[in-house]
Image 1 (cartoon, rainbow, N blue to C red):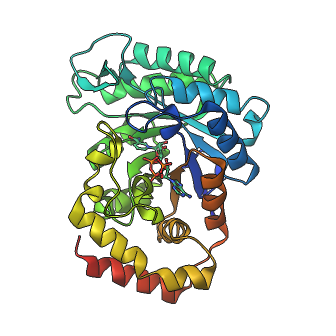
Image 2 (cartoon, rainbow, N blue to C red; image 1 turned 120 degrees about the vertical axis):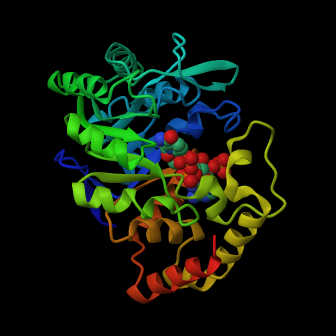
Length: 327
Ligand SMILES: NC(=O)c1ccc[n+]([C@@H]2O[C@H](COP(=O)([O-])OP(=O)(O)OC[C@H]3O[C@@H](n4cnc5c(N)ncnc54)[C@H](OP(=O)(O)O)[C@@H]3O)[C@@H](O)[C@H]2O)c1
């Protein structure tokens, strides 16, 4: 699998990374054994999945704490990203959502971002982050002007506390605004073979402006591994109940698509998830594929995708199958 440079930061990484949202536990993903999480993260690093992504809100700090424990003695081997701008220390005029009974707000002010980073560094047991993302944007930019947000990032960069500037869940206007205000290396966005809306505007814009794209939920939260059936149900509050691709019509399409690729799995000696990861990473625009995993076994399976190199003919066939899905 190819490597990508994160924007113009000079940081180069293999195109497959590991996300740790599920490792935070809570109602979104259900209970999680921290010892298994730690083994999963350490196994990922050993197998060359070196970009580890987390966020304070994943399990209300718990994911960051677990990542910090897992990376003790391994920090120099990884590219570490976390996020800022979602708060439950204080209320703001911008309510985000209630997470496990806690009201969470958005705050992209300089003071709040700096405090977020100082606290994340402690939980992650490190003195710097490789990438810091704003987690969600605030459409009313009079409240938190992008210039103020970028001032925080540039201050942190000058202090050596972050190396690259990221923004997540953006519109094209935000990409332009971040660049005009001082810089943007990478955006983190939902992108999978079932969710391709950003191919229209954001992807061409990022290509033109030299901003990298990190794709989140590329396996559609497990749906595209092939292990989910039409009968699979999730407990109330589970994040998959809010994912449109788990609704019956789209789920059926996803499962039919995967069944049609069984011969490809045999040809490449890989799992369905591997095929999806390899296809996603093979788009013309260099994409960093951020796959969530919570067990060493899942990590081992996903790591295999790094050695799957799809032929031009098979890529074209998969693309045609996707077009025919009429999503
Ligand atoms: N910026 C944002 O707003 C945002 C939003 C969402 C995600 N993210 C980031 O992106 C990362 C990835 O997205 P995601 O976790 O939502 O979805 P994903 O990567 O599409 O799916 C991850 C889930 O799929 C299952 N899975 C993964 N590998 C598997 C394998 N080999 N075999 C079987 N099952 C497997 C696991 O769930 P089970 O064990 O439960 O089956 C895992 O938690 C997150 O962890 C997070 O770091 C960012």
